[in-house]
Image 1 (tube, rainbow, N blue to C red):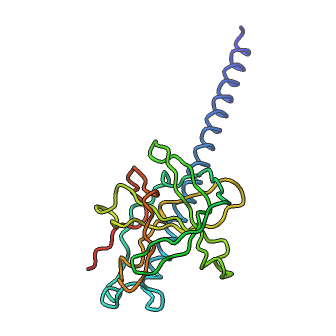
Image 2: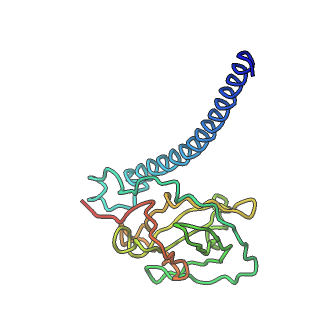
Length: 216
């Protein structure tokens, strides 16, 4: 191999290595950008929730707590708690009365079952549709996901938390546990809140979303 050929080979190697590194670099950037978008969505959710709790027109807080309210206590945003679940529809499910924290019963139906992996384990959760709310136009696509997990009673409210969802177009459902929030009755006993069915217990800690409420 003469000097000219050797230099050409060296140049091609550098170019190929550079291209390979550039591709890996862009792959990494795309992943970071995706995570960034998810985190921004979580931060926006937190901001809107805090705004709701500050506003006397929408806040579930007692006046004495709202007047000193600054922010709910959230777990840090964590994209590992954004899962894509296989969504199994249950069109033949029989409507039932879900117990609440008062004598009221919530008219619900199991709209589907979400199957997913979290913290290295397979899980499934029932997803409900309110037969009372579905009559209202603004709630026609609304789905209700209450759940329990291993943080309840320690880091989070003992009775579990809720996630609001919308009916997906296909057979997958994105569940962002960073958007889990407490039932209103945690803050004010005047509210009647659905009790989380025992079958919606996740045998893993979900350190995402809103933590338990400790008044100032």
